[in-house]
Every structure is written in C-alpha cells, then in structure tokens.
Image 1 (cartoon, rainbow over the protein chains, first blue to last red):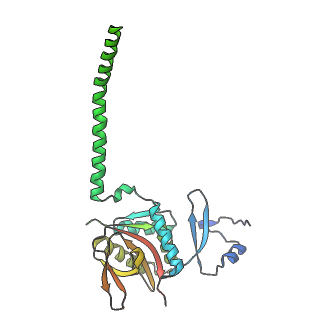
Image 2 (image 1 turned 180 degrees about the vertical axis):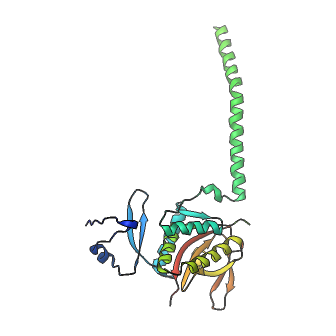
Image 3 (image 1 turned 120 degrees about the horizontal axis):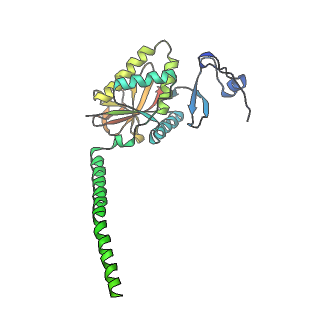
Length: 149
Length: 106
C-alpha cells in the first residue's frame, strides 16, 4: 500500500498528493467525499451526483437504507431542525446522531411494550411478596423434621 | 398527524456535495429544501412520482435537474401524471427516509 503525507494548514486545508489525485481520476472542480468509520479512520472518495436510475444510484440508495437500519441518520421533526442539520453539514460537522429506536414505535407497539413491562413488574412484585411466605413454610417444615428426629 | 424525516448519512454527504456544486446558489437550494421538508412534514405534499417501484421510493425535484429520492413508510399507487410517470400517494405516511440526490437523465 503506497503512503503519502500532507500537512494540515489554516482552515483545515490539505493538498492532495498528485499521485492520489491521479489514481482517483480527479479534475479541477471535482468534489470529494470523506467518510469516517467511527474508529478514527477516514476514507476519501470522488463524489458526484449520480444519474437517476443508474446502477450507481441504486447502490447509493442501498447504502443510504443501510445507514438508516444501522442508526446512521438524523431525525428531523421540523423545518428548523432541518435548517440546523444543513448548517452543521455545511460546516463539516458530524450531524448523524440517531435517536433511540423507541421513538419510532407505533401506538399499538407502545401499548404492547407497556403491557409487557406491567406484567413483568407484577410478576416481580408477587415473587417479592411470596418469598417471605415461602421461606416461612420451609422454616416450619424444617422445624417439623427436627421435632420428628 | 405527527410526521418525521430520517436523513441518512449517505444523503447528508450528497447534500453537502450539492451545496458545494451549487456554490453561489445556496439560498435557492436551501429554500427549495425547506419547501420539500415542510411539505412532507405538514402533509401538504402527499403525491410524488415513483422512483423505483420495487422499493417504494419516490422523488421530488430540487433545483436544475437534481432530484431528491425518499421512501415513505406507507404509500399506494395513484395513477399517472401527464408525462406518463407513475404517481405514488403517501398521504398516510408518518415517516420519510431521505435517501439520495440524483440527477435526471438527459
């Protein structure tokens, strides 16, 4: 793997090494995309707006769906949210923070979860109430056994 | 009805690229994006051309030949427009995934 180095300058500017530009097939005015892997690594790709219906576009849509499945999305509830989101994007800040999936439960799913939690709590409570009785019974049984001995 | 959008990481990067590509026309792009987002959230946009019939995606024009691809969580076919494109109705959708920005074919 060939390695090249570049120094970070003012306003986060770096010059791409000529060999990288050549290998990526970049030209003046082209846009590049940086994608982070969450572990400190960054990948650089040529970015372009793809043609509708092309195989590349389909691949990008699949990648976007995967982003959503894996929680790499930003939840937008208002135009204000969206404006803030775009502002972050344009500043190069990482915007994609997913909210807990529970936010997306339907009303019936939410009822199911509540019912399940209630049932579990009831079971827990009844087991707590039953424990002293159970232990008292065991204690009485042991006392009876001792008396018989 | 409460509606929400999920902006995929991939979509975010595409959008940032589009802002770069349309340097000097950022306000125009932002205004159109606001229209689309507002329309989906408040339910004033309920129909759009189908993008891919197999995965229930739709598309709406942004600026120039650029189009935003999104997926509503509920949709039904709704006939065709004057250009013969299949139209999808997503009036009952509550969640929209913003997936991609593409350029219309010549």
